[in-house]
Length: 216
Image (cartoon, rainbow, N blue to C red; front, side, top):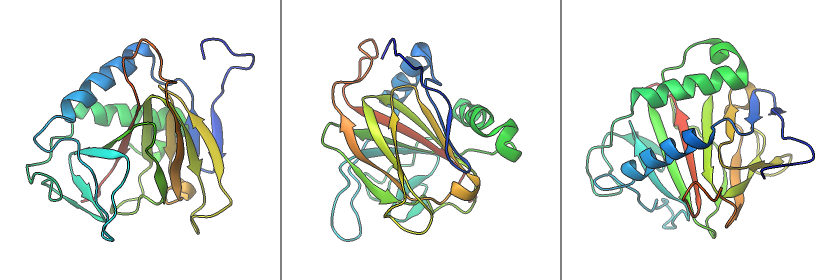
């Protein structure tokens, strides 16, 4: 919203898990969206992820740096067209480090070498079940950037997919970082609110850009 009675403020949702509203300004959102549209094109473009049990994820995905598939990483789109994964740009890694500095303090302890981006596209019916980001060989903080429609982001605990958890409203331009004791917490997206993207952005749906350090 353009004007609110109480402006949204930086919030520590759990130890090491921080929500920073409006971190990307309008220009930054448009630039990141333009890049996502380039990355989503074939080869190794946007795909539907199939789970080992034969199901499919409702959010579609494209990867940079390393290609994630359940539950490993590869250098090619092994569950897509088989093409080499698109490179991870240096500027995106710098964006990730700035995000950690903002959320957790100077480098969150060190200047992490981000080398993976998972970009998920949600239409109005898409969801993401509770899961942990545990396929990396490092505990570096995860950086999450939101573009487009507002969503409910459910941030839970490290032991179970069930309660306790906290629901956070993530809007276009918001930053969420989780590291330290919250690095392997379960999290998911139970709901997207269609039609809530900023009118000037030119996006119908939600994009989530998640940056990780592979340790590979």
